[in-house]
Image 1 (cartoon, one colour):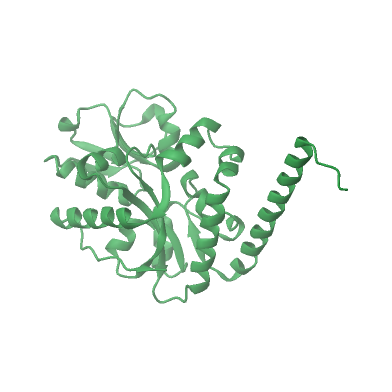
Image 2 (cartoon, one colour; image 1 turned 30 degrees about the horizontal axis):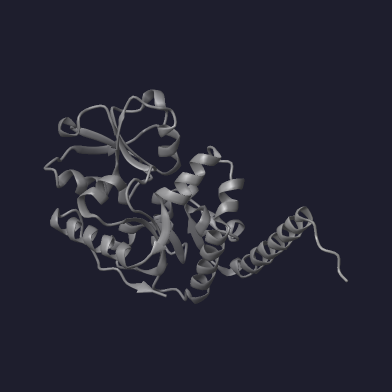
Length: 284
C-alpha cells in the first residue's frame, strides 16, 4: 500500500510538476523561434504576450519597432494599433491585444494647466497611438493644443503638460507628481463605453506568418496561464502594483468589444481628419 503524502510533500510535488511543464513549454517555444523575426516593446505590459520567446524576440521602443517592421526587418511586431490603421501593409493576429476597459494607468496626459487652457503638450517620442488618441479626445472637447516632442524623462524637468506611455509613465506616476493625471483609457471609456486597444501583433502580408502566428498564440496562452507567476517573480515596481496593473488595468484579448472599440477609433480618426485610415484585417 502506497503511503499517503503529507500536505507539504504534496504541495512540493505539484510545484515540481508545474515547473517541469513550464520548462517543457519554454523549450518548445524557444527552438523554432530561431527562424522567426519578431519584435516587441520593452514594457511590463507586453511580458505576458512573449512568455517563452523572450530570448528570441527583439525588444525595441514602439516608434523604432514600427520603423523596423515597415522596413521589412521584422515579419511581426507588437505595435501600436495606429501603425496598422495608417499603413496598408499588415494583418492583425486575431484574439490578442494590449487593451483596457477604463483606467489603463500607463497612458496619460500629466498636466498642470487646466485641460481647457493647455496650449502645448510635450509627447513621449515612443508614442504612436497615444498621440492620436489624445488628439481625438481633445478634439471631441473642441481643444486643439500644439504637440511637440518630449526631450527628457527627468521628473525634475518634466513640462507642465506631457503625454507619457509605458514604463516611463508608470515611473513618473510613482514619483507622486504635482501634475493632474488625465488617464486616456478612462477618458476613452467615459466617452464611448468601449475598450481601447493600444497594441496588436501586426503581421506583414508579404511574409509567411503561419509559424509565427502559432508561436505567438502559444506564448500568449502560456503567459496568461502563468500570469500569477509573472506577477510574483517580475522585479518591476512592487507586487501589489504588478498585480493590479497586469491583472486589472490591462487585458490581453481581442474580442468583439475590442474590435468595436477599434472601429469607433477609426470613425473618430476619420472624423477629425488625422490621417488616411485603412480598415483592419484579422487573421487567425
